[in-house]
Image (cartoon, rainbow, N blue to C red; front, top):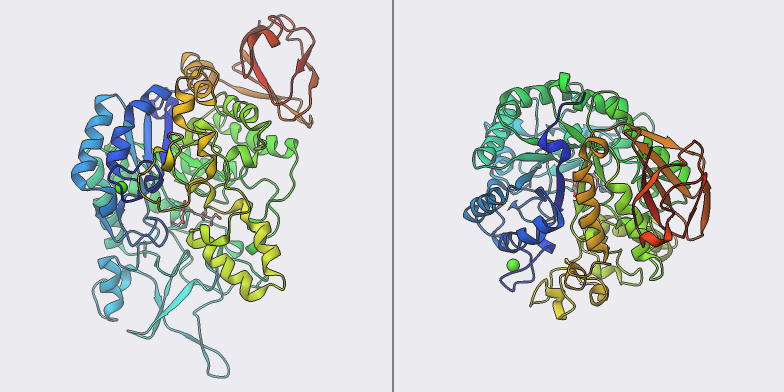
Amino acid sequence: DIPRAWWKSAVVYQIYPASFLDTNGDGVGDLRGVINKLDYLKNLGVDVIWLSPIFKSPQVDMGYDISDYRDIHAPYGTVADVDELIAELHKRGMKLVLDLVVNHTSDQHAWFLESKSSKTNPKRDWYYWRPAKVDADGNKKEPNNWQSVFGGSTWKHDETTDEYFLHYFDESQPDLNFENVEVRQAVYDLMKFWLDKGADGYRMDVIARISKNVAFPDAPEQVPGARYQDFDRRAGPRLHEFLQEMNREVLSKYDCLTVGELNFVDPKTMLNFVHPDRKEIQTGFSFDHVNVGLKGMGLGRHLVNPWTLPEWKDTITRWQWLREAGGWHALYLENHDQPRSISRFGDDSPEWRWASGRVLALLHTTLFGTVYLYQGEEIGMINVPLDWPIEDYQDVQTQILVKEINETCENPAKVIQQLLPKMRDHPRTPMQWTAEAGAGFSTAKPWMRLPEDFTVCNVEAQVNDPKSLFSFWKSVLAFRREHEDALVYGSYRELSHEDEAIFAYVRDDKFLVVLNFSKNQVVYSLPEKFSSSKFLISTTEESEWPATLGDKLALPPWTGAVYEVS
Ligand code: TEU
Ligand code: CA
């Protein structure tokens, strides 16, 4: 039997602080705004909040570029506000997860300023510095040909000492050198700083990248547009050693939740991080389901390609296997880097938006793993309209991509148009609280453009409406809690894998979940004998569903139901 734990049955809600709620009229969300909405979240059924980075930062990458790990980005508030937030959460039986961004710091962090000041500075070795590579003609070049995730070389020249430093992401995000034991100790210290204050865990940003192949060999053959990770997807040689040390020194001493962001990891490899015997971390975010249809690398990575339901089901079913293997899984359909789920996996046309949102909610809450919800997902926020001018997109990655396209593509406008549906700006628009001007998010001009859609999609309109998507989320989260043994911990078995419209599975041999992922009515022939199963819940009126299953089930467009197997 699987051991129970609070972090396994928890519902985690991710907050993007800049866009959650602005309480002091500067157009930027803040910690006071988070504190003010704790009752809202509690009412929804949230146990844990995960805050995207709140620390001091020049905000080139929205706080994923930290310049002081022990201070708060001033517009968000102060350390005292965090203390208050923790107290208010704990008072309600809720918990706080912080974002641990230690693969890199900001180039404004004191560590980096010292490191770059001279070759003999004691912190020189805290980052990766390398001299230029001199080619046959005596020309100076980057130390190798790796490309950064956002674009351009992964090395940046610094004039102070005429050397290059490594940055896997933006050039303002130099990578910390984990080979250096002082760096690791500094990371453990800052982790303890917040855990000792009462934080309950960490989401670990790009944690699989902290160990590098320090020989930094050239990529064998540069595919045009390929990025660093296209070449070297393998975890660095010391990754697991570092994570085990982090666990020994810090994590094992606290009752905390850990979830690593683990791009390009398959389920078997994931087990090396999350199996309890490994003593590393508890769970990881996988990317297969959000990368469905992904073809090509470089720019190609950002295009939305066609995909089929069987392909998508496969990316989900494959990961449910972690349960059998003794691991744990992290379930998510959205985060601050991904398009809105209704736009990506449902149908965001006015006709099907709410119905498909319910199908996704029922899926999300009946799979094995810890549930992660992203702000606005519970009210069905969708991608921004594709006719917004590019100036309304603010993300650093979008800006770098657009620049690259303008410089290299023959028909830049067309390529940019193809890229827009997957840009990271979609989930970052202000949270839509009310139908008033400013959407109840702010009385000032928000830091990022507010979609006009807030008049039809907002919390105020949904929270007391029993037929709203919000109310549906609330009821399925309660349903999951009520049947935790089966839905959180129980087995998973998929049915009719090849079906192009239906996603069906059985949890714990007890609950049959059938979902119609199409805008057509589908008559689903049950592949096994479920004929006396009893109706439990559905995405639409109960009267639309047979109380007892026969050998066929007619599903209206974009609907789903759960039956109790008997
Ligand atoms: O993201 C890591 C990452 O590689 C991708 O998810 C990235 O967003 C990709 O370019 C998507 O197109 C993490 C954070 O979630 C992201 O917000 C940060 O920008 C990044 O690390 C650097 O800290
Ligand atoms: Ca504010």
